Image (cartoon, rainbow over all chains, first blue to last red; front, side):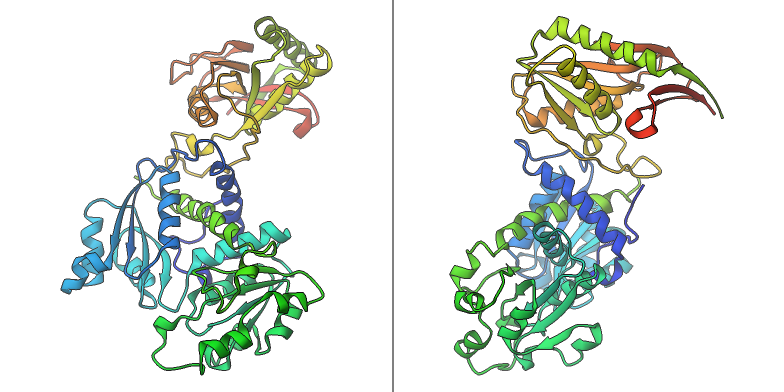
Length: 309
Length: 179
């Protein structure tokens, strides 16, 4: 009987290949569940989950909420903008107050790197990292790999290029870990200023020419430029960025093969990707969203399995 | 551990035919009846029953679904080791259908209880019946009884009924094992 090797989902770097396989196998079952007439199972009836979002989120928050509801868990939602965090309360105090209400699992998004790890050492609940600063976003990487597996049959041996703002992207880092764990080759592509200096130490290659990167890959995972995390200008103008790194139909037509286009959202249409590409048959962007619910159900289910009363 | 043979392959063959005939008595041409095998082990029995009904009694368009009940079990997080889920394959609606739930062994009745909950997520059946190969008497935790039973067995708690199918164990046989 299989179970996860970790007590919390803090990042992909703490997982092994078997964990990812188990999450995907379980997600396959949940994908069938969420396509039934009644899209709900009663597994987590006695589990309470707190969704703590100290940073803005739309789809991740909705996706987690839906996944929890599909598993019949009780949920409480918290966003920093409407809370006592504004009044100066510390993270541990906030979370411990919430845990006093008998919460079993905490799903947390936080602007600070390592917030999930920190919390896991100080509170008695399962922690799921829903994004910690520019560090990791493990469930996004899992659903990205799951979507590639669904579209191409497997991740192993596939060539994946991550295009865009790698420097500020937690999605990029988690994807690099997840894809490499499953035997994929990973390349990053973007302006030199938005590629971390030592990224090659993770075993990825760097390409600054978009056309060459797309010629090489089977899948392009396109990332948004995260203006909100930029304190200085990393490139001259958005127009120039789009001209050099924006994916449009002409670029795709110039390739001698079809590649799969992914985007974790939110999309800035006309900047990193044009509408015709985002809505084309090559795009699996909406499949990613659907798979996100199934993968998050799997993660929550497998962690809840470890909770003993 | 000692074991004795409860049913050999010939006896199983006879029982499966008898169960198929009993189903025909109640469901005629199966036009409004579907078979649902509980995963994993009830699935083999359900497929056998379907094959007999289709090939030997010429029932046409008989619908068979496979139902996994892992996410409906009442012992989630109470077991020492977690159960691996199997796949659910029901590509038809159960709304207003007569459903025959099929499992290999009826013991505590908890799996069937989970199955009854799970089946409702595919629609509201008109009627649900239960068919089992082995009915272990005096071991029920819930008020659940089969409509069709292959063989009734009195077994104490230390004993285990093990059903082997030729699809997985090369021959059909049912053992009563004692630890």
